[in-house]
Length: 152
Image 1 (cartoon, rainbow, N blue to C red):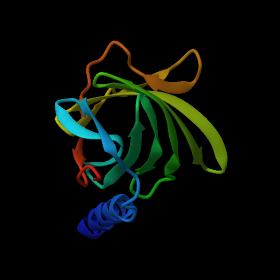
Image 2 (tube, rainbow, N blue to C red; image 1 turned 60 degrees about the vertical axis):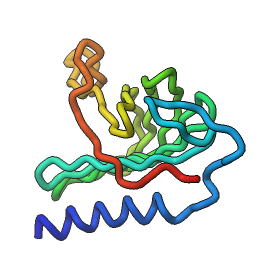
Image 3 (cartoon, rainbow, N blue to C red; image 1 turned 45 degrees about the vertical axis):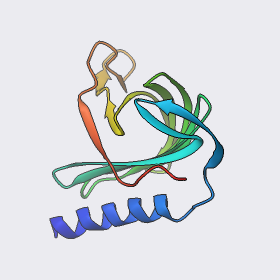
């Protein structure tokens, strides 16, 4: 069963990334994290941890990031929503607006692109606010693997 869930999550991520071939503008290129890519391009990533998985599809246009992020823990309520933010060099700062258990919420997330691999700073629980937040003092320790190639 575990393998079926992981395979399904990976297949869903790959199909969502490869289903739209007109996402990129191929007239100009920019170098992002040592990769020459179209000025507007989509990247897809997948992170699995045990039976849990997280998929990210992001579109980078100039220094703006838009996209989708789905956190799907095994036998728990998922978080599915949109990403919006900026990229500077290889550092990505986004706000994730998601739905969970019928409620809308947001989280500020920080990522780093490293040769087409995505790394995220972990989340911690803030007892004062009662909310999760990015651990700004931590390194980029949560790896995501590329789920597809850059669009041309």
